[in-house]
Length: 222
Ligand code: GRF
Image (cartoon, rainbow, N blue to C red; front, top):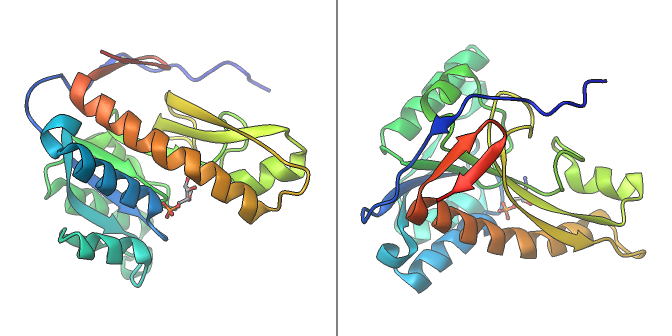
């Protein structure tokens, strides 16, 4: 098995500056990570935080994540895979819907779809995901369940840039959570999400305020 980390080119991404950066957030579920971003921006003020959310997108309707966005007065859009003939068409439509809001950064906050080539061509190097495990362990849709089943004693969350693999992109920050003997998936996931929400809000603000560069696998926040 190839255990070498994936290498990539150095990508110059956002630069620091006084401008308040534009965020598009993508959700698929309850949207508590989106809420953490909204709350932190509200608490700090967009100028001090360095960014504001300009739109929220989803891959499905009827979710609390979209309701949170609507309550916050934000524009929303939905791109459902089943409404398109091919996955490529869905990917291009999603990329177009996001691009319409001219984001500096796109945040996948519990967005449960893998994006394709077109999306990455437009937003690679500025598409941030949060994953509920300590990558590179336990990638994929069941990171919490898989860590528990494996018998891991610590797990946590990882905020990373998205590349063309599944949860393989350059790591920005991680938070550690101990696994307890009595944990089931839902109890463990709730404790991970406590850490994850704080980490995501903190990291996105730092990326926006300070600027960053991606050197191969290494993310340097300036
Ligand atoms: C988070 O733990 C995220 O990492 C995972 O799904 C959860 C989303 O939670 N992929 P929420 O929708 O932000 O409440």
